[in-house]
Length: 279
Image 1 (tube, helix red, strand yellow):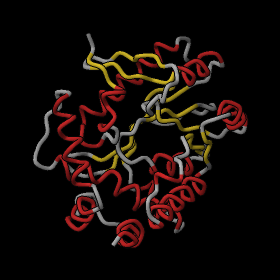
Image 2 (image 1 turned 30 degrees about the vertical axis):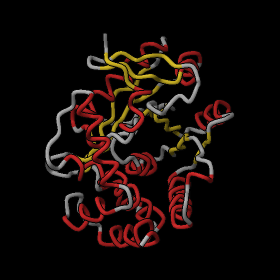
Image 3 (image 1 turned 180 degrees about the horizontal axis):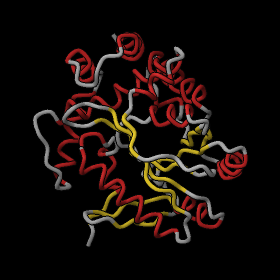
Image 4 (image 1 turned 180 degrees about the vertical axis):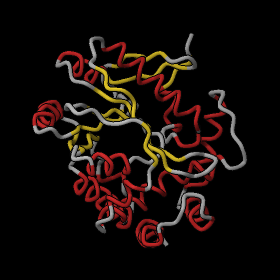
């Protein structure tokens, strides 16, 4: 069952290119080990933060990671261009080198595929998980598949010495992609101010962008909660001059994503360490 859930079923879904709200896809997403329990816990946390939910909230919550697993297979089987074409795009990437800033909202591989098809090789910046996180061989194989997809689309940079690699990527006109709502894990943060909450954003990234005057673009990639259409929204290019302004911008961008659909945020389980109610 574990091998089927982590690898075989997502491969079939990629081959069939099931629509987001196809009932077979929704059922398999909710049936993924631990998905329903996690969705219930996260729904309670979202409601505690004042976000309302409907009877389909848990299904939409489970769909984002399911789409990631499907998209991995789309990519490693040579269909990243098709993956990019599935997404309705609003906005455009700038011509000059920049850093793309996203959040853990939605399922982001179409963003990397879209950048790749536009000749802006995406380099995904992430924290490498310890081997102990993956309890079964199926989970380890699924993670290896995901990393293979990321490398096919452009490459990866792991945290720890990332600064020099990000600067080198920009010199090569590649596009570093960073998720700004990642837990700080003891590193210094700035509180970005939005209307409903403040978001803790790692200060090192903000300082680097400001010090080097690196243009950044905020984006979000999810699906329409009514139609199921996958959507990529690209914000304007900004040349930063103040770390606090970037943090505020990121917080407002996450707030706008949660207003579209709070079910698609992947970090409700650690939201108490990331979000604080705005005074």
